[in-house]
Every structure is written in C-alpha cells, then in structure tokens.
Image (cartoon, rainbow, N blue to C red; front, side, top):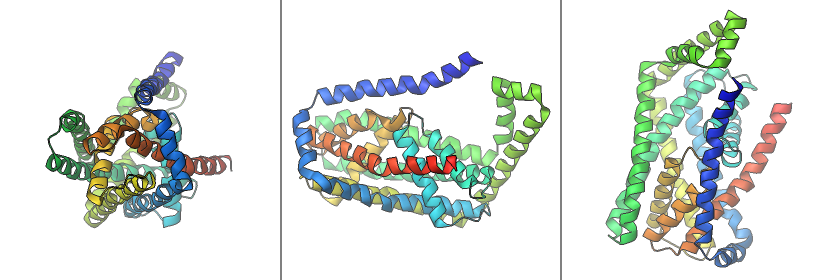
Length: 337
C-alpha cells in the first residue's frame, strides 16, 4: 500500500518538475534585467491588479453560493467567499492539483455546519458550469485572435489553443454526463474494490463502507436536486461568465501599470487565450511554467514584447502571493481551531 501511495504522490511532483523546467527555459530566453526593471518601475502599483482580482473572486463565490442554496445549505455570502478564497490560495501556492483547493473549500464549509455532501455536490456542479463559461470565454478570445491577423506567431498559437479549448469541452461534457447519470454511488463501490485503503477499512469494519455508500448515494440525490433548479444553474453560469470577463480587467490594469497599455478587447483576448493554455496544463501544480510560457506565446500574437508578456505573467504571481499567503494562514487557523 505504501508503494501505491508513493506512486500517487509522484504524479504531481513529476508534473511540478516538468513545469519548473519549462519555466527555466522561458526565463532563460528573456532579458531578465528588463523584466525586473519593468516590475520595479511599476512598484506599489502592482497591487492594483491584485486588489481588482477580489471582484471576479466575489463573482465566483456568488456563483457557488447559488448552487449551495439549491442544496438547502444555510450559507451566507461571507462564508462562501472565505471558502472560495482559501480554495484559490491552496491551488496557487501548494504543490497540489486543482482538487486540493476543492477539498479545502468543502472543509471550510463543514466547520460552519454545512455537510460535506452538500459542499461536494455544489462544488461539482459549480466547477462544471465554470468549464462551460470558460469555453465561451475562450471561443471569444479565439475569434478576436482570428480577426486580428494571420501572422506566423498566430499560426503557432492556434494548435495549443485548440488543444486547450478541446480539453475544456471534453472535461465539461464528461462532467455534465456524470451529473445527468448520477454515478457517484457506483463509482464509490468501484473505488472500494480497487483502493487498498478502502479495502483495509472494509476488512476492519463494514460500517466504514456502508457510511461511504450512504454519503455517495446522498451526493447523487443532491446533484439531481441542483440539476432541477434551472434558475440556479443559469444564475451560476451567469456569475461565472461575469467572473471570466471581469478577470480580463486585471490584465488590462496590469499592462497599464507595466507601461504597455492595450485596449479592452485586446486585454480580453489575451486573458482568454492565456487561461485556455493554463487550463491545458491543469495537471501542473500552480500552472508553474505553463502560465508563464502561455502568456509569452499569447503576448507575441498580440504584439507584446516577450519581456512585457513575462512581466505580465509575474504580476499574476504577485497577486497569488498577496492574496494567497493570507488565505493559507486563515485556513491554518481554521484547521487548528
């Protein structure tokens, strides 16, 4: 069993190493002195894009709260915003895949009286709708890129962008089919047969297996309940779409701070396409290397200097530190309490 646990941990570590190598290659190819000068010249103004990020983060929290309410969970906006903030902090700064943040947000809710099943069901639906909202966002960015020009840089970018969009569509469609079929209980039984930890629990006590089976059955029931709330689904989708669009304002602000102002449409397209490439590298913790390399590629297609595009990517890392470190401290305080 220990060997299997080590293999499970090796996956994220290998992905992190691969991302680090990509990041090293991107950094080596640029004039780092110019990148550092751009960031230093911006100074405290780099906090403006970071603070603006609280606006799309609030939209994401409201999108999740809409589906949480559909599960009859008694939650206020402040609690949901805190859980969503901790979720993002965990995913940005800890060496975990995106599922780590989901677990963190569910734990935050469970400590305030919301059942883990309600948190999991709402998070599954919320993330599925987020994928569809992102797909529309990326499609608009691709349209803006196609209408702009047919340069060589644009041609090189289309293949990875198409891969990212196809990946978002495939994951979103698969997740939606899972929601429609209600397969969590059956999947749980399969995992109980395959995972050695579950087998050990079953050997020690049948109560653990029965308890897990009950929770998964309730998860299916709650997901089906949410699916019947059409108004909640549309509201969640709308808030998620608003979050994606407002996220492009962060890019617009960051480029202005860096001394390379662009138009609103251009900033929208840069953000959309960079997010598509980041989604394609979802297996890399924190999108290390994927985010930086993707932003440089997208920046080239829109006429940005490589150093400016890399500085833009690093402003996102500044935001992750400014907002993420307090988020991790808050999560630690909640867990220890």
